[in-house]
Length: 184
View 1: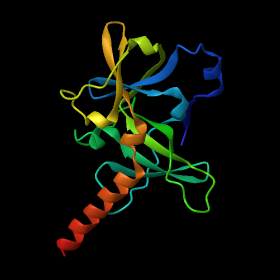
View 2 (view 1 turned 45 degrees about the vertical axis):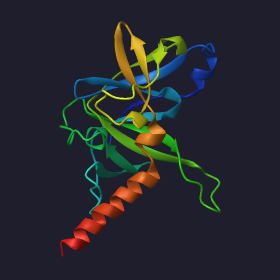
View 3 (view 1 turned 90 degrees about the vertical axis):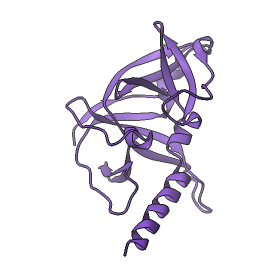
């Protein structure tokens, strides 16, 4: 697996307090963004191992320097069907807060998300961020942290903790597993 790009978190602290940096990317025809501090790296799409009996949005796992990292298809997670992989498709490796185990000090979990194309890193001032709409968005309202105004257009700022909620995804996997048991 070839590494396409790595995003370092350290320069973020050097920006002024009233600016926030976001990685923007496309899913279908819509532009989304995630706070840069959640991004670990961006890699080319490939080398996925499928895992049986997972929800449709779990595309599989990858080996990232010896660690098993689950890969989520964001298009499918948003209820839009499976992503069509093209030459610009890539996997963005994110770090989210994981549920803390009783004897585990490490509370961060790496998860990969498939996106159609990575665009750029933008600075969006808090004054340019509107609250999440209560309706009208094509994804669940709890997945949206806000709407960033960039050059006269809105960019959907994702709340990755909700989008990639490990507990909710595990619950969905058990429901899918239950459906398979009923079919036997």
